[in-house]
Image (cartoon, rainbow, N blue to C red; front, top):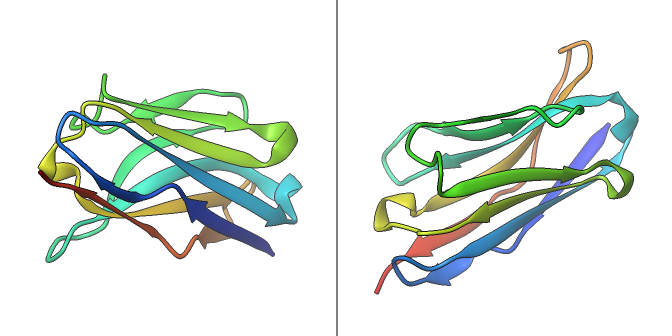
Length: 117
């Protein structure tokens, strides 16, 4: 089993920055791809960014150039640096991890990000 705990959310003004963290514990050696998803009120959960164990990344068009996903494999932690935040980035952000054989998907409890003046 893998446990994921997000932190770093909060209230920020438009054009501001936040850095989210996701700490993984348990059988972390089974994990390959990790990612960040978000869900705004009344909307479906959507992909924000993905990163493989080898460091390859993929971003949603809406955050490309503003957000940066990274991963510290030695410390089992993933990050999301969010710059130039917009009100439409307001959502609960979830950490996600997928095992190497794609048999299991794990989710964190989520952290609220609110972009408002």
